[in-house]
Image (cartoon, rainbow, N blue to C red):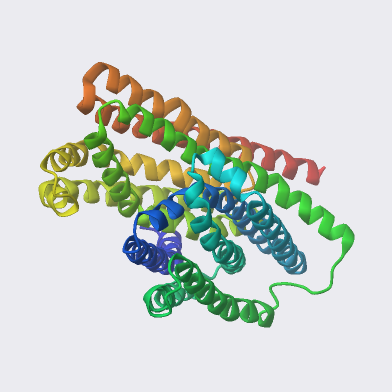
Amino acid sequence: MTSQTKSLAVQLYRMTMPMIIGVLAIMSYQLVDSAFIGQLGVKPLAAVGFTIPVYQLIIGIQVGIGIATTAVIAQALGANKEDHARQLGTLVVAVGFLSILLLCVLIWFNQEALLRLLGAEPELYPTVREYWFPWLISAWLGAMLYFGYSIYRAQGHTKAPGVVMVVTSIINMILDPLFIFTFDMGIAGAAWATICAFLVGCVIIYPKILAKHWVSLKLRLKENLSGLQQLVAIMLPAMMSQFIPPISAMAATAIVAGYGETVVAAWGLGTRLEFFSIIVVLALTMAMPPMVGRLRGAGELDKIHLLVKIAVGFVFVWQLLIALIGIALASPIGNLLTTDQTVSDILTDYLWRVPFSFGALGICMIMVSVANAMGKSMRALSISALRLLCCYLPCLWLGSQLGGLNGMFLGALVGNVAAGIMSWVIYRKGMKKLKRAMAAEATLSKV
């Protein structure tokens, strides 16, 4: 291993570890949150169920802004344009503040129309209304906190966001039973607990951002308009790519539903296990963009390629290890997650096949993240769309038609592998094209 490879690997490790801890903390509080709400009965659970698709809309816009934030600020810093990076930081906070606030207000005033569209029964409306008022406040605060994390990551710092994720998750878990049961606030108590946690997070994050001068209070109209164009160019395709997975998940569920409730139950458990198994990949997709953005701003494409190779190699080996552990523990995992033996057996079949493709899935996710970080958001959108609409779903359907249930699982495996290969080919072609363009620019500048 060369000294440059070792240096990049160490830097990637330091950036990724806080994100792994933070993501685990968030997942833990969400699990605890669901468990407490589950004790309140069917209506509160149904209210949360109808909230999820609406929340995906907010998250899609939020993540789109966050991706654009990391890309444009990191590239500005890589090009030694620190003042421009500060202007972009201010712009991000302002755009995020207004756009998510406007969306939350629109959702509140159109809640009954949304619930009718989602198929909710009218008797559920009062429960949803009780929950959605504090929930929308928490969604807005959560978005603001996320934008703060994005500014930190763009500056190359992931430790503070990771720590705040843990702190807010612990506060949420402590306050949940207090607000829900002790103060008898019911389902609304869960949202108020999240509001308190996110407020604490914002109070920690934003004073530090101001103290480090990562945002500027001096607004320059011309520069801000230019920055807004940069943000929108990356933000819109990134938002669109966030909406593709939920649509794909619904289509996959429709294919699976043809086999009955037990298979749907096993598939649902399998997809949850998939999310847990790719936590490291998710953390990498948060840690890599600021590194890639800075290197892109400095024009160091060879270092970007080396960083990508390190990440891809690690993900491939790590996910293979996870798949082998899954096979070894398939039966115990199935019995732990469900008391229904049929569901457990189907889940075991799933774990014997699909997880072997998670390495390829992880590579695809990294390619999307790298493309966004380099400002090639349309390429990232293309990879996301091709993965789900041209590789995964067609292979899932074809496997189901040819081989039944096990054929469907093999189809999922083949689809993910095909997506991984496809994303790598697109990345390599993009890098070669960018190198030629930069070489041509360098030649012209000498003339």
